[in-house]
Image (tube, rainbow, N blue to C red):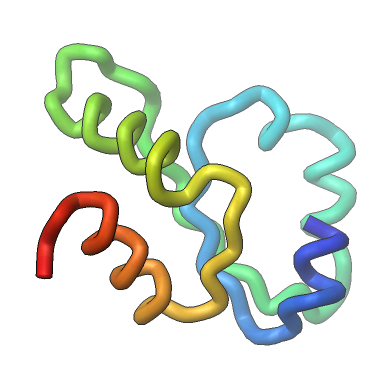
Length: 86
């Protein structure tokens, strides 16, 4: 996140899954950084019975893995390309 923050200074909206890496002390320390301009949206706990779990897994693998889109429009464009939606 530090590397991304150095490149992208605008406010962030981060959708967070429940990975243990997101809940550790290093991340907790980072989140105390002044003026991060960061809004976290935590996903609910994993439930394989929910159909949206498969959708989120697909989206992470095909659309958002290790990428910063910079704008909502760019994310929507990438989603549309992968999903075959015009």
